[in-house]
Image (cartoon, rainbow, N blue to C red):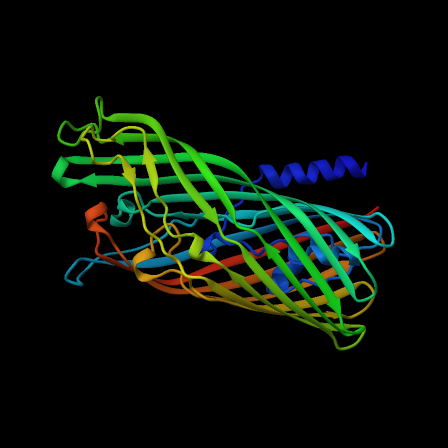
Amino acid sequence: MNKNFLALGLAAALLAPQVAGAEGFAINEWSAEGVAMGGARMFAEDDAANVAYNPASITKVKGEVMKSSYTYLSPHGNYKLYDGAGKEIEDGKNVVHAGWAVGSYYVRQINDKEWFGIGAFPRFAMVSEFERASKASTNAFFSKLNGVSVTPTYAHKFDKKWSAAVGAEINYVGLELQKNLVIPTAGVNGTTQIEGESYALGWNAAANYAFDDKNEIGVVYRSRIKHSLEADLKGYGTKSPASPLVGSNDVFGNAYGVVTLPDSWDIGYNHKFDKKTRLELKATRTNWSTYDALNVYFDKSLVGIPGIAESSPSAKNWSNGWRYAIGLEHNFSDKYAAMAGFAFDESSIPYNGGDFMVPTGLRRTYSIGARYNDKKQTVAVALGWMDVGTLDFAGHPEKGDAYSSAHAYDSFTKIASISYQRKF
């Protein structure tokens, strides 16, 4: 029965939509307990989600454990657009496009020294949508990156102080981009859609060291992953003779591009005040400088004019950034516990590298949660509020944007999560 449960859980994580309004596509919401503690959950006891948060900590799992988690994220935000003279030309908001981050985990203790674990969870994903008739739509009116990582992991406990883990990562991305294509000099006014998917391989490694019964540190490294994306290209004209795409106003072809998902480091510290209360600190360094451009090339011109609309170049040049989190867990009894957390994310988006795919600035996330457990089952719930802040970024009229600059403001994301774990 446990094998069927594992297969079902992994299938659910792979097939469910993986979308969120997070900075730089990064997802940290891998379990309800993790959400409740702001993502600072690297040293949990008997938690199968350690496969995601800290593979070296699966050595804290006793026996055989399966876990599933479902996190709901609902992003909201407003924007203003300006022309070259600084005059406001549009005031709008995003179309609320909520989604789910789904995780499934399985951990088995092989013996006193060895553990095996596997997880399926999103490390990178995002979605954003704006009104198709808005001026923002010339940059992007619908952008979605579905992502899921499958991570088979081996962990070894050397002694009471040291444990380590190494794992592979099979990473899937599905990318869809839609925008209005406007080239006044060529009399073009249409819509383009790029949709494709890719699989790539990466790896991770982790280590924990316990100074004593109350203090522990851990480090996790996740490698960068390079995707070579092959996609379908679709172009739709307005059916007006004055604004055609190629031929009969519609174009169908192929698109090609390369996206490198960044490598990252997690550094964590765990302190137990007593048997009931503990505190975690976590810092994450993500090397977003790998996201230097999002250039997509077409196998034909969308407008039938050589050199025009044969590609969609977009320089990003994001900077490396840090995320800091603190989480508190208190056990009222053997069955009931409460958690709280706070996280602060730096913005990695430069003025000339921003767009309506990910229009978010620095973020502050506040969260709370509760857990019930008995000898066989654990149920946890969490609520979070992400204050996304503001972001100013440049438009590129020479590439078709109908604005010269943009200001995103009053942005936030609602978060709700539930997890279920069972021991066998």
